[in-house]
Length: 114
Image 1 (cartoon, rainbow, N blue to C red):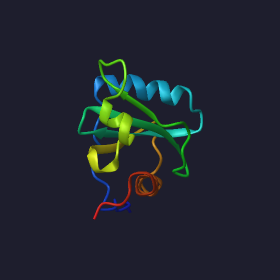
Image 2: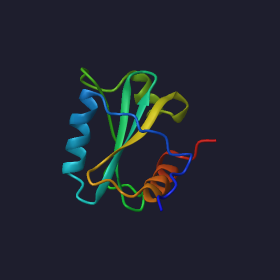
Image 3: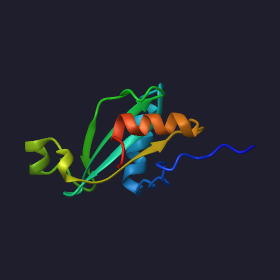
């Protein structure tokens, strides 16, 4: 009998080209990681961090902006305030965790959608 997929798991976003290089670098330096949380801000900056099987941080938070020497002035002031998030997702390492582990990690790291 097939397992039912929870309703709150939506198809994940895919990383953009610049994000993918950062994700691979973060995963390379984080052997315990099962994925990388990617948070896109309205200013174009990104926040990323590796997460482990328990949904705990497996790396430091990295902030960057594509094609720029540093993050924007607003992010320097508010450190990428959550009110400015436009999209957020987890880019999973292969092999991906099972659907229930993914659901737990998403809820712990990104919060529950209501």
